Amino acid sequence: MKHFLIILILLTAISTTTSAQHKCKTDILVQRNTAEYPFIKEERQRINAFTERWIANPINQNSRTVVTIPVVVHVVWNSSIENISDAQIRSQIDVLNEDFRKLNSNHSSTPAAFQAIAADTEIEFCLAAFDPAGNPTSGITRKQTSINEIGETEDYYDPVKGTPPWDNKKYMNIWVCGLSYYLYGYAYPPGSAFPNEADGVVIAPHYFGRIGTAANSAPAHLGRTTTHEVGHYLNLSHVWGDGNGGCNQDDFVNDTPLQDVETYGCQTFPLLDNCSSSGNGINFNNYLDYTDDACMTMFTTGQKMRMLATLNGPRASLLTASACSVTSVRNILSETNAFSASPNPTNDELYIELSNQIKPGLTFQLTDLLGNVLQEFELFQDKRIAVSDLPNGIYLLNCKEYPMSVEKVIVSK
Ligand SMILES: [Zn+2]
Image (cartoon, rainbow, N blue to C red; front, side):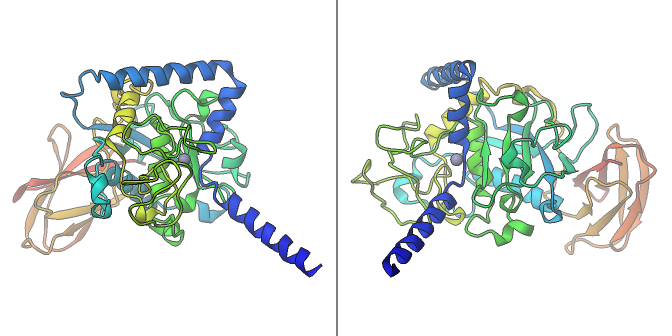
């Protein structure tokens, strides 16, 4: 009996550990929808065939510049702790831009053998500056739902229970909403969502961003759950080839080594397995593995090409949209850092903070986009100015003595 109890306890522990390891269910959802809907299976085959053709002959690749994907974040919260702050959301956009542009601070820990294939994907992200009606926006929506763990029920896009997507041809929709404890997030690769409204990325609130509630979510506290899921959204598979893995299951990327199953924790190079049993071993530090956030460091060049194929094919409409063409809240020119203005967007006032490096007594102007001066004032110390009488829109705050220092200000009420 005693032995039986010990075995029972062990079995319980093992089953808990196993379920805790399903961080992402993207592959399960794709398998479900391709099995259930023949047209989705055909669309996925068509997209993957296009992807292979495009990578073999990447048209216009040499003349391409960095692209920016407009993002809208829908916070669908049940308990108030799920209603994460704007700052936490913006920290996630920062993580995406660092990771996708190879600007991540831990990039130097990429094993030397993998550095040659570590890619700057030349893909960036912005919080949308305009909503589908053309009005200025912070790129963030918020709604309280009565449904606990709405991401599990997949009602997150329901107009009543959750928040419907903004046109998902023009915006990458991210829903930040409750999921059961073991699940971090999921995304629909192009052509795999049903209904179409579900298309986008879904992330648990405490894994979104790297500050606020995310800061307590180690080892997934650095925002890389979303980096991983946006990889899926742009048609990357797990590096071990999805499903149960095995050496016959590939991720359709040439430069990622064959890999048996997912990796956990923080591993050291070289990490060998059944499928890559010598040499450099597996690319365990890839964003599309399950390694701890602190030890994920790279996409490969092959993964970059697959994502660019997506942006030249099934998701090309994201780049023709104008939601990012006037970039959202950021300095146009910030070389001098003469001052900062916050909050931005604002609905009533701006707090202008002077840099320590400049002398007081500077002249500031707030203008519209045509250069018409709406307010002019001298600043001897930090100051609040009222903007509540201005119509919604984009304005420029500039310092006459530092003409290169201009900040875009959005008034949104
Ligand atoms: Zn995944």
